[in-house]
Image (cartoon, rainbow, N blue to C red; front, side, top):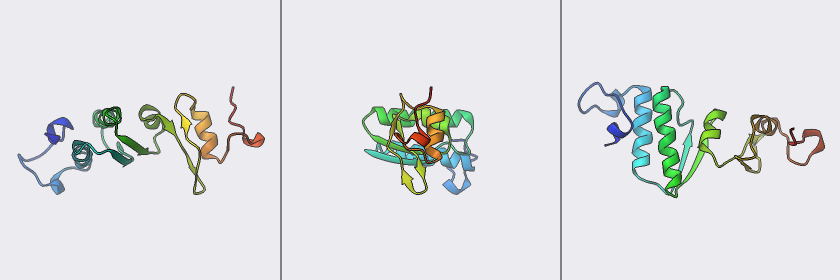
Length: 130
């Protein structure tokens, strides 16, 4: 079921996980965890190293999990991925986590300022961007 749902490409009818390529192993592991329908799921770089089709499949599965009521925390360096998957974005800078910025208010510029250490309300690093 997982192999079909996540389009895992295998070289044998029933391969060991170690025999899968990196991208196929990643699809299998994400699919296995999604199949458990967790109430909370934390993913780090969920689409790193997989092809565009696999990335789209993983992203859609995470969106569906969140829509079903599960909490999904995505850690990623891919801003496009974060904008596609997130309801809000928080940024780590110097070991500090920013306040979450609702996705409706988020822009690449605002995220960039937060990445540089800007905080809302500080005149020298204002997040008020025209």
